[in-house]
Amino acid sequence: MSHRCSCGILYATHVPAFGTGYFKGTMPKIILDTDPGVDDTLALLLALTSPDIEIVGITTVAGNAPIDLTTANALRLLEAMDISTIPVARGAERPLVRQPSPALQIHGSDGLGESGLPGPDRLSPVASGAPEFIKALVRDHPYADIDLVAVGPLTNVATTFLAAPDVATRLRSVVIMGGAFALTPHGHGNVTPVSEFNVWADPEAADIVFRSGASITAVGLDVTTSPGAILTSDLHETLAASTHPAARLTARVTRLGLSRRGQVQLHDPLALAAVVRPDIIETRDFPVEVVLSEGTTRGQTIADQRPRPEGEDAPTTISIATSVADPGFRDLLVGRLTGAPGR
Ligand code: BDR
Ligand code: CA
Image (cartoon, rainbow, N blue to C red; front, side):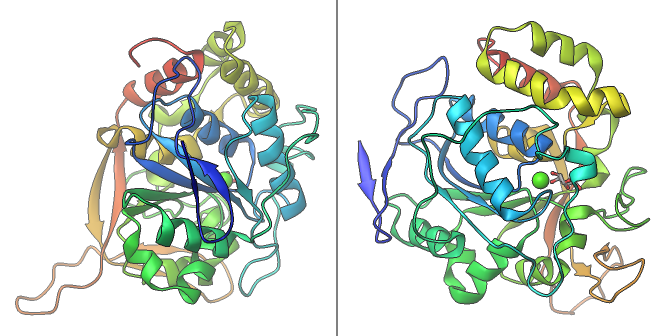
């Protein structure tokens, strides 16, 4: 079964996941906005191996690596998984206001942990850019159940919402990996003492998205750097020993990070897992302010925990992840990536 949206893209409405082959037409659908990226790779692979969701499109953004590389990497990963039915749209080459700040020192010069993945040889991006692509998919999709999972800087999402504000509320939800909200002992920054990379890289975009009226869940460092969201060498051994292509690819791209730092933080796959299995995280709702000024606090995400005076208008809030099921999340991730039944 296929559907042609007004942007002219013919895309499959069901993409069999590995180990399945059944119709996915009524499954929840996601658009994955990503900057692959080692942990972005794991988010993509978790989505591809999850029979209970369907990726209807991938959009790329400059973040961990320049846009040419993140786009090529998204295509490379699909080719490595032998998937050609998911359209990839190239997105922003730079943040709304700032200069790009790639993180190749973390993700390797290829953005994929020096894994030497070949290609892309067969796939190329669709003609429309990411904002046009997202708008068309959301407005024209025959279902009203699309979640936008954004695991890079929020440039594409903000640009889409500025051009088409209705898209923010037509989406069922926007789940982001981003922010450090000081709600747990782990909720401190990873670029500055208080700022997380995705929000720090394009704080103006994050500010626009947080004010857009979309139903937002932020999976931030408060949970993604907690012990329940760490890939350790024992889990790496399990993945490397598997015959499943997703597990082997995961083992390949995470090898460098493990050897350099002894662990890989599972930021982006946790955001994806929160869509696959919402009870993997607990959340609390707060109004959030993004700091836009230069300096140490640029990109800080401040959750306002003050009680509201009675009678005051309720402020706009977003849901912020405050805990992760342990070992539930890592069991889900490793189970899906290795094709274990029932996970
Ligand atoms: C986020 O920044 C990137 O380096 C990762 O891919 C993740 O999306 C963590 O701060
Ligand atoms: Ca990312």
